[in-house]
Length: 311
Image 1 (tube, helix red, strand yellow):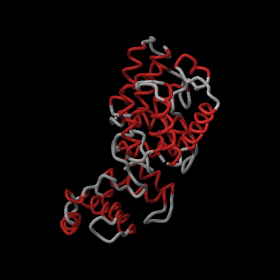
Image 2: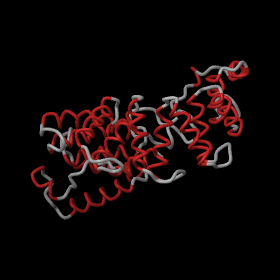
Image 3: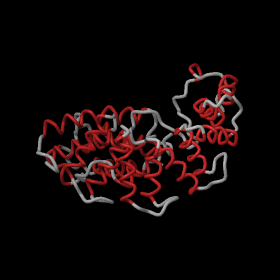
């Protein structure tokens, strides 16, 4: 499962530190007794599914220590998701004593089995220097490996690294290709950043029509994220309304989404809201013609912000 409370692919399921999908449906979950019997027979997936139940308290009394034990059985049985879920518990000290070195080993095992979340989680450790010595080059390798396993988040983060030359030599063409994969996989930031590249002719031939096309793909993904309470999605959507990128320019909507982002604890949203309210109060013109002078041209995403969302 993805490390942290918010994944970058904002339109997909969000995962908690305990490794439990928020979209878990009790109506489709096998019964705990059946899972326990299957686990006892050596079915690794059943052990992991039962571990999810104990981690979340779904259909059973919550017991994170038992969840960790079941994840261990799943991992030992070759279930890569079980290894990753156990890694989350060790990293956060839930159900097991906090041990980031052990978490890294488990993420590596999951990644080696081509489980993308394991690669992303380990990559985030290397990128932030939390649990591993900071090594952005190694982090990018891991994010690219996740991308190869069709993980849109991994594609986006790797694409951003190539765009700014962090951990790798700057390569805008590679960045654009990775953003395309991220966008195709439903990653809103990938769509937006690729749109910005086409708008500015940055690493690709300038093409305003293509820029608008990718902006329009990003907007509903950000809205979906905002609707389920992901504050960065609200901030990004507010920025699009403020700029008129992929949506009709609407300062009132921008203010509303900035406020939702701020209410959700997003510092960028609070700063943007304060700036926008101040500009309105002093009567500064808000047309598209003069917006280049007061809105940063960079897309509303970044290497560190990206990693923060993964945590």
